[in-house]
Length: 370
Image (cartoon, rainbow, N blue to C red):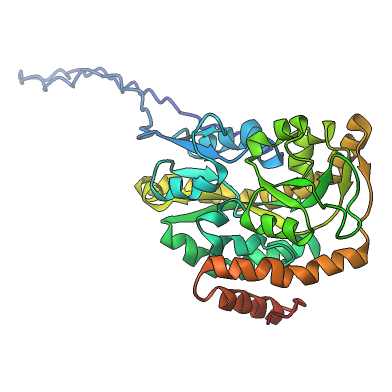
């Protein structure tokens, strides 16, 4: 964590004085006007200006990036702005919005800033969920995910412009995997009759492709749903799963690597433009210095968290048959991508083709889109 910078206020007190003596002269002359009495200079205090308090809505409590907001980011941002921007994060339950509604809350100015996931807002803006479309991320792991986001950022910015907001920062969670209370994902019969927690229309489609029964449940309700048997498994990443203690109930973990979640910090443009320029400059300078750390942090902790889940909770890990995963990917083109294009509306398939071309031109091998 960066050392907190403190601003030292220098107190300068100048004492000016002198005695004026008249010289004797043969002929008397009027005495010179007396010098003004010395005055103490007031201590100069810096006028910090107006303090802005922003409530920040979030879409969860668990996970690496939420821990960082609690432990360091809020305080560091306040320090970076000389105390003039105070962020007050609120968690699900503290604010009344579900994950999928946070984009609208930012757009309407109900909150000036929100931490959300593009996978969650696909119901209101499917064009943003292309960033988390299952198996659409090019091969190459985390670095490829970051590169993909960079390459298609003009497209993302254009969509966000319509929602009167912009990305301040982006966090990438680890891959979305399969977690089951019992059994293993081995073939297309493995999930028959099983209720699997999903969090977006696209994960609904993916679970359907694998013959499971998707159950849409908000993140804040996932643990109790596992405990009560409402669901028999879920799709999520390692960081969120372990920090939420899901492995206390879910004992079987299989790497599916369907996609990496993109979790931006979105800021309302009107609220941003109301901030003085010096505050905006300080915030952007802070995030410029933290961008790579914030983007990579969760992925860097995953191996440690998996070891914790194995030793503390008895989590079992089994690889997925590669030919089965390849078949899931193949079926996803029609079973997941096509429904996404229909939800995106007119031109949805064209969006997929355009993004595919951008990625292919950058050297990535992408599945063919009919």
